[in-house]
Image (cartoon, rainbow, N blue to C red):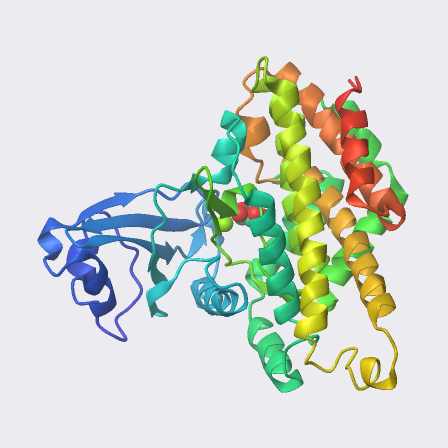
Length: 419
Ligand code: SR1
Ligand code: MG
């Protein structure tokens, strides 16, 4: 593609001719673009995603559209999100090696990234709906979250690098604005783009009448916008993870920003909890076994996060925060400081978790775990459990001393008839 040429959205038909000159792509799939096979597979809310195969291999070509794909051109969205996704991917690759797709080529004008294709991986959400287990999932996710969190913070980074990075990502205004609106605000009033399942009205009314809940959510929003602890993935749900039966990777960090460490792990747990609550509509005899497996994934992800975070605290605490000169070098154990930091992370995480559980049922972008349930009476009953647990998490976030309490709460709400 010619440098400086104007942005133009790719199509299946135009892609081979337009990208035939991209050396990094040719190196992966082969030089003869006339034999490339191209499929558009984007099923997310925002972008074009092409799988391009040739005699030598396969890659993903992801291109941003100048609007929100889910809504159409009535909601314009800057192409610059591809720039931030590219920079997020390079940082994640350095901080959590092997966890994210390798980038082969980035074209800022065309808002386009050519990256590694994972096969035979599929979107984790589809596996959770199908009732498939993934070996090593919790270990992978817990480690990924801890590594990106720790290594993207002033616990580890040079202060000048961290400040430069925060400044860089602060240029991304419109994408965080989606989260600030759709996630933190719209669920709690009758916003224009909202929708919820028929029959849920009494539960929705109860949540929207809870002023204390709204205050807690706005406090969480303030932490999200102003606490730049680390570089977040920013949209870490089960649609941003690809898995086989025993391998997983994280994709799609276009919502990356510097924010509170608890955000990614909280959002991730919310998506496992929504998978958990939706299971009665998707499973038969294996319901209990599979729901138990999901709770185990949540427990093990949080445990692995803590273990990895504590290990990095001991081995990579080279930043300005809690320096050894202030603790170990004075003969002072820093474990208490690490404990306090983890407490704060979990407190944030459980409140972000509850908020994500709300927005996926009340705001614009719902998830397939619930949306695939055709019988709306069943769907509303299961979503009600999820919504009420979300509220409990937001209210009680500061008192949940371990993930076991969260799983016990999930079992409790799973047995409730709320509607
Ligand atoms: C308008 S974008 C809606 C949602 O899709 C993305 O995946 C994010 O989750 C965003 O909130
Ligand atoms: Mg996405």
